[in-house]
Image (tube, rainbow, N blue to C red; front, side, top):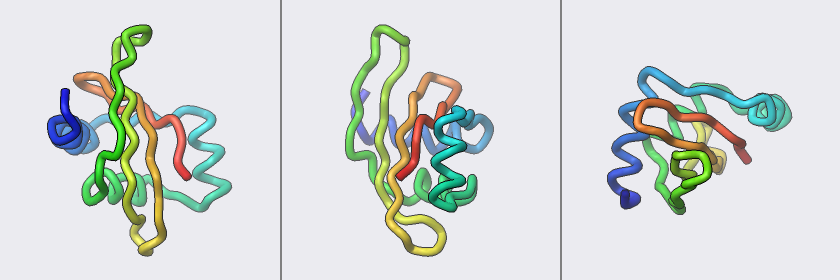
Amino acid sequence: MDKEKAHSLIKKISETCISITRHCRQRMAQRNVSMDDIRYVIQWGEVVSLEESPEYGNWKCTIKGVDIDGNELTFVAAVTENEIICITVF
């Protein structure tokens, strides 16, 4: 999968299924990041890295952009064909 296909898939999946890890919830609280901020970065940000993780059967993806307030935000997730698992935000 290339970055463009990954971004298209992530945008589509984000409409229905984003899971948040405990670590990510902690970072969201520390950094005042909302689910709306994450969805905004997914929609308007840029996929800057993408690597396959055969061990877990998914892809690790990093998207950089800005949140709703215009602050820089980086979103790191594991992506499958039907789920996005948010690993961390910073």
